[in-house]
Image (cartoon, rainbow, N blue to C red; front, side, top):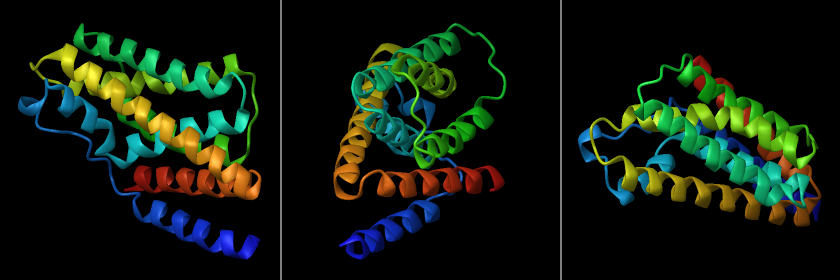
Length: 195
């Protein structure tokens, strides 16, 4: 039974590694400002997708309150980062921090790190600040409110997909499959950093 599960998991891990190209989540700022542009924005870059799904998988691994608290902390703090960018506050090392989030969150999953929900929420909040800031700097002069609501919804959808994936993988193979996927995520993040 495990061999039947392990092969698709290995294939998925390989596909994730292949997806480790540089992040291209940057739409033309003139196209920003709509809810749909915001909704699609987190889904157009491997760095955003991997980090958001890893948050959900990690929350599912921790279980209990963390399944809601960890993704919620990410979304709220991402909104704060977005507001900071719009207000002109300068935040250094944004792109390196986003890529570090892919590696770090992948490692949290790969190592099955179990922290209290509040500590896990604090970890993801640090990274969320940079993700939100990046969304704000990419907006240009377009409508912030509708775009912001869209990327918050898109992020929440990716988190929900990660939680669902984590629950499903944990039922199939304990935490082994989730851990393999976390390792692949961390490796993809390293590949993005090197690229």
